[in-house]
Image (cartoon, rainbow, N blue to C red; front, side, top):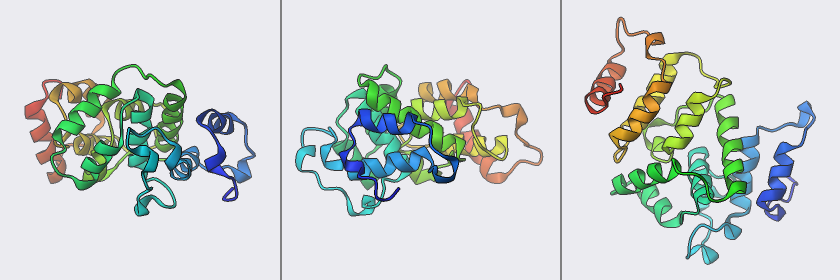
Length: 217
């Protein structure tokens, strides 16, 4: 409900809401609830040393964008300061180091169990609702652990394996994405199921570039 005071819910309380059975006719996708909660709870989130007085960006007033929500929850789950990286990724300048560090950190065990469970709820809900593709700008926010989990889900909603491949190539071509990380995710793409004859030009060019970087591909 829009009237639900989301800012009053702690991470533990929100988890109880997400875990509770809800009548089908009033159920909202869990990712929508989590993104609205992130926006409502912004000033109380441990986003870094400067987060105490951090103002919610105007663009995030109603809800955090899906890919940004993934980034924030992964940072919170790993106990990593998010605001500086958030600014860097928003600006889109010199992001290689930020992307590389965020990927590496995402593959390590989470240090905060509550935020890690919220991340799982967010990622699983998005995958089951068909939100796999993020486009080139959005893919920079999606870390290796998140993309791996999405591709691993049996309930992942996509219309074809070609959709998976397109999303993978967009993700793999983000500046700062290390070849070793690409190699860990690539086996989750079922390449034999992709129609490649005749090849789509955009897929062919992007696949060639990733192929040269990744022995696994």
